[in-house]
Amino acid sequence: MSRLINFGLGIAALALPLSASASASTLARQSGAVGIVTYDPIPVTETQTTPIPVPYAWLEAHFPEVAHESGAYEAAATATAENGRPVWVCYAVGLDPTDRLDDFRITRFRMDGDMPMFEFNHTTDGSGNSILPYIKPLGKARLTDKWRHVPDGGSPVFRFFAAEVVPPGSVSIVDEELDGVQLWENGPCWATCNVGAATAEESGYYFWWGDTVGYRRENDAWVAADGSTSSFLFNSDNTPTNDKDDATLLAEGWIDSTGNLVAAHDAATAHLGSPWRMPTGAELSALIGNCTTAWITTNGVSWRLVTGKGAYADKSIFLPADGYGDSSSLLTTINGCRSSTPDDSGKAWHLFLSSLPIGAFGFGRSNGDRYAGRPVRPV
Image 1 (cartoon, rainbow, N blue to C red):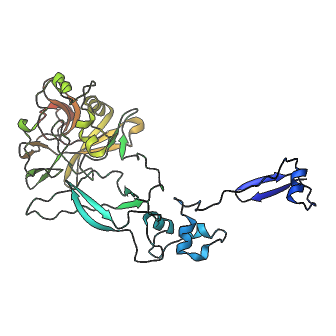
Image 2 (image 1 turned 180 degrees about the horizontal axis):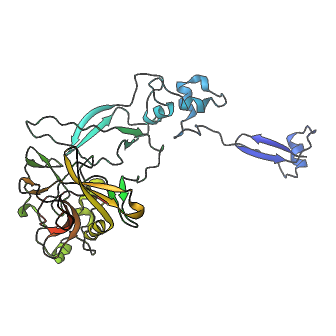
Image 3 (image 1 turned 135 degrees about the vertical axis):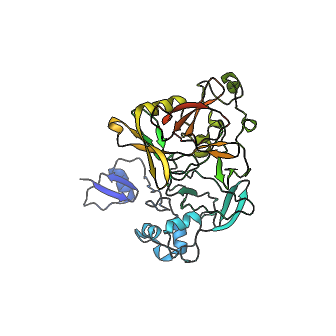
């Protein structure tokens, strides 16, 4: 018979009679070894079951009672600290788990150009290593709105977003599935709201064709999403793509060989990141051909309900009647959203929608001036 000897992390089997009481040299002779073999198991120095490993030494420094107790390290690391956080989280962001007042908080706010920056009270882990926590927004897969600047004399505007601070190493940072609806087989997924909007009924930002800044309507004026101006005019002078033919657009880097806007000039990609993009003119035509539509009004908002057919009959998106920007005005005679495709007459394709019957400017594709400000519905 053989005796199985367990050394914690290592397991060794020796051919040895169970009744024997042998010295190291006897073991060596009976096992046929040339010399004495010494087995040194790798010591365990950190937790194995927490999202990130917590060193035993750090746990012993804060909880001396866990030292050398079987299973105590894992239990201590997953327990709730005095400040209400898991103990392993305290290690990750450099908190004292025994101090109920020591917590992860914003200590300073500052503006970096046109974007807000927050500084935290802890930027090192329990070993003094610099860390950059992963900020994961909750409620929306992507925050489509940037910082909102308030014009001088304007009323304060607040934007609230819940965010989860996840210590590095505790999650795999991957490109999450964004909110999107597929309306026909092999078709793209359509976003459920416009760029710059938080809900389907909001218009979001308006863009001239090739623009990536975006402008929102405030106090009867067009205000840049990045705060660069509060009195933008949608006109040909402010539209460098206006009336240019495809050859010029390609030479200047506005479009690629497919004839559509490049990512650097795609409003959806600029605000939401890849893989979101503006729909092509062909995709607008496919939307019209593969879906049914109805004009509805809810809560004072008029829009087109666009629904798939057949196996996709339970899938729908709402397209609000949001008008378009012309100079300093918002005109509501024509509604729709942009595509990434120019036409061959110096204009660009867009989707139009209204309360008129289908085929009579109720729902279709048309070309329009590139300088006009129109919303963007990403795919």
